[in-house]
Image (cartoon, rainbow, N blue to C red; front, side, top):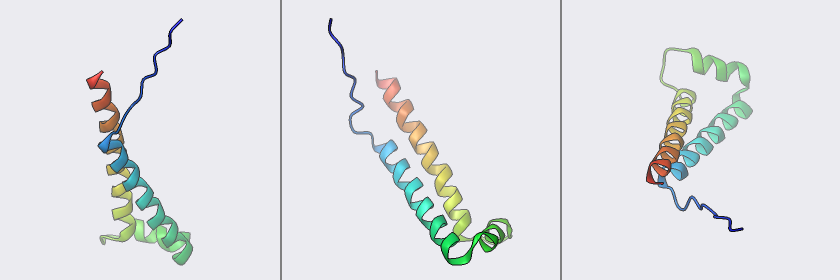
Length: 77
């Protein structure tokens, strides 16, 4: 009875996606602790480009990078 171990190896897309998500969560958490939930929600909903909107974009971009990383690895197998 033999079992094969599939190692994912190094995946640049997944690593960068995790990095983007961690950085966005740090920024949003910092703003929540400094300003409070009401102000952060106002920053999300106003018409200006704010740090919170950039962080939300980083979350989306990080998720896309992770999905691309898994897809790229699956195509290689």
